[in-house]
Image (cartoon, rainbow, N blue to C red; front, side, top):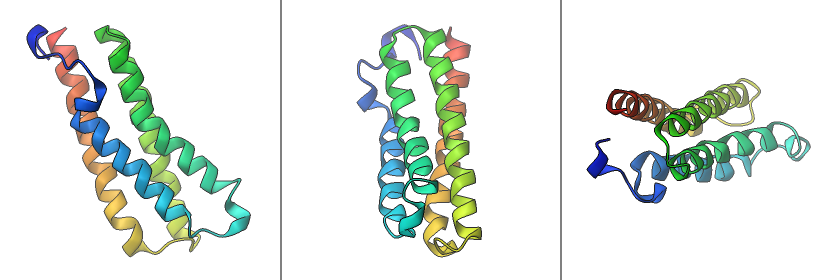
Amino acid sequence: MNEGTRVQDYKQLLVWQKAMQLAEQIYQLTRGFPADERFALVAQMRRAAVSVPSNIAEGQARRTTGEFVRFLSHAQGSLAEVDTQLLLSVRLGFCSQSKADPILALIVELRKMLASLRRKLVADH
């Protein structure tokens, strides 16, 4: 991002908006998981999913490029957690592959968007 194109609010970032969609979709999906997973896999998946847009927001709000890049890295880590946990959920039979596929596609899209934003920030810095 060039000096003149820096967003003033994280809510303007498409990557944050898509990360919010991911969190919503994870919450919706995990409502159908077994009750005995509520404090285990469900809680982990929800926490990791919420962490993605939260880290994007916190990083952008810090107002320094280095911190923003660091928080985007945290968001990428949380995204990998959600990916792994979703794949495990399918393997354990908690959700079908057909329900997981659109979320997995969103995860791939977010991974690319986060990597691209990090590269852009580092290049412009």
